[in-house]
Length: 528
Image (cartoon, rainbow, N blue to C red; front, side):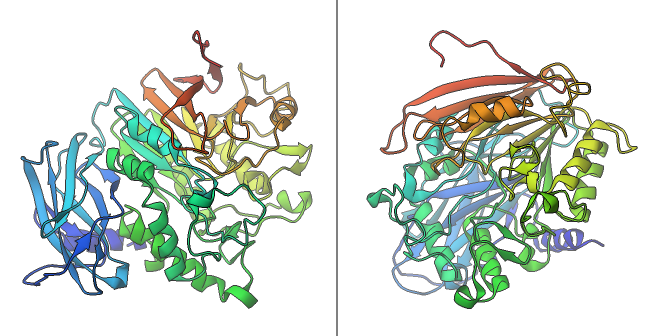
């Protein structure tokens, strides 16, 4: 039995009967524990990793004194919380930073539920979640948002507020850099907002540091609103631990100063699993694989990758190292899992949710713009392209959509190994093997200087659209998929320097079923 199979079987064995729940946090099921202390719910609620019959529910309590706290949870079919279908009580304590995760089971597929937590008279805000459809169910439409790169001190999370207000989302994807490890010293000389200070002042290294940083983020009202409005599926990139991290180290880690890398990585992972609504069966600290997949009926299957801590090689030092066939962005096992799973999938659309831009991006021919992205791991990227297109000896994979973050800008790409080979590739017409939608950052400044985007489009004709400016290029994207097409719509808050609900609509791009090229949809009157 695989590690994941063993962990899943263990979790199932510990669950209570249907329409009940099991604790997914490592906390204890409460029995006769007496509690007469004071608590507050300062960090909101969240839900995540939806399946057809269950979903993770999350919150955190702040007690007046350090002692175990029994927390009651309930989930209902109505917003008024009158039709409760499952409830229970679990105990949390300082060993997991007073966070709570439970997994109600026996829920109905593809429907909304509402949930909340309480301790005595203290009650959390209410959240709304939604289960996934049954694997073989006929699904007409799936809508989901993609987000990444939220540096708290660089601006207000207005993009998360926009996500919260989006109607009818099935799920929200966090594609990495949910938090940043940087301390004030790392960011000295940059455009920090003084009212958005994020303790600790030094870079996060220890478990307490990462817990403190997550706690600051979870006080943000727009992030709280986005979590309370929709279920999330989360994957990490580097800044949840340290900049440019990989299996055995990181660019922003000095063992002489910061201690052993494996200790720091383990602490960052522990805090991540404590503070986010992610199923414990995917926790690498317990020997599990973080990559996973989720099926939304017969319409979409999501493949969520771990390109940081599953066999990743260090970033290349030069162009020669970038083409090394032994250089890996992810393990060979994960590569096989992805390709085999996409080929066997019974869903019409295959969506790969991952971290860094997959399409080639070079500053000069042969020179990767960002060595930490897929452009620094060219051989493995080309193997994926060959599998998508069927030139590796296996069947081609149709309707491939990749969603990515990391680069703090909008990119909409057709996936092809060499877009300058005009005999095999013609932009918008033929020769690509799938498409990629890269979301802008929530607040993190641009990785690309203003004006360079036009140069990139000239050098790389597979980039069908890009956007990003110093203050107006932050935002998120919403993908809308049905049997006929996949459309990506981009949304940009007018600023991140002040709290605001104002946003502008960006371009909409479309991939039609059975095709591999992007269509830029006509602009409406008043659009940019």
